Length: 314
Ligand code: UD2
Image (cartoon, rainbow, N blue to C red; front, side):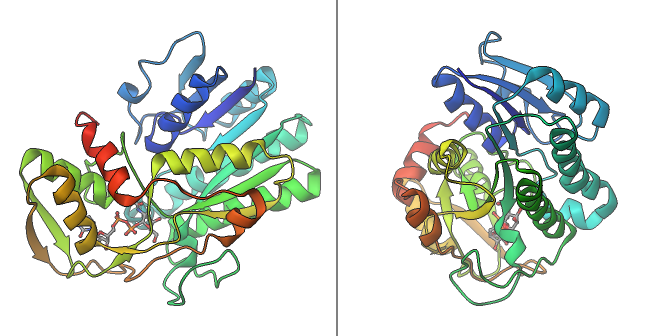
């Protein structure tokens, strides 16, 4: 049996990861301040296998005591202000959470010589910025344009360099547009598919920013969880960064058509101007994760949308 620490474990990706780990018989400790995550995402887990601390990852003393006393096998860093817009409004505060809190965890591991099996830092396709060449491989030009992207890139680089310098097994992932159950549709900056699902269910109007021809590499949560577990458990994987995505790009117009077919209703759409700084096209090159660990996504867009829509409550 292994023990995992998951920061941000009450959030969208975190709570789905916890569910999978618990189903495999392992134990999880979640640290989440519920600023973006929700208690209802994790309340149903057995207390025997999942412990929850409602804490800020910026509480350095708390994190140190926890890491030193628990002897984690695996550490997954998902805790963040996962909003580019918030990082633009409040760069210093989000920097503390999105970068310094992670550096603090690397430091705790180093200073206390903790023997972990793997640490995974969750980075983002945001690090590629607006350089137009597609698809984005891990070697593509990096052009982080917002505090969010800069902090993600720095935390990622720290994870990998720390790993190498101090012999700590670390890995980083760059997620593209992940969607699926438990994604919170409450903000206008939530994942677009969580918003579209919400509008389809409630028959409310969806606001399209731009003409809908913008493309994204939409990746279903179960594929993302599988990739994370492979990267955590493969001993040959360390000190490296991997795109986690499908390698395909789909426009908003196309995905809305598929979603309407799955839901068997039409989405009401109103059009507004394109968002400032919106990236027109996004697509991952997934050769590295395919070649190094044999990972391929399995869930087509239609299948992912079916699974997602089937779970009306989340
Ligand atoms: C994703 C990440 C973001 C950052 C960025 C880096 C999510 C939720 N966001 O932003 O954190 O990493 O990638 O490039 O994964 N849209 C609408 N109507 C809406 C909401 C969105 O038209 O109500 C459009 C939006 O303008 C954009 C597209 O849908 O063109 C996708 O938006 P998004 O916020 O889901 O994701 P993205 O790629 O902008």
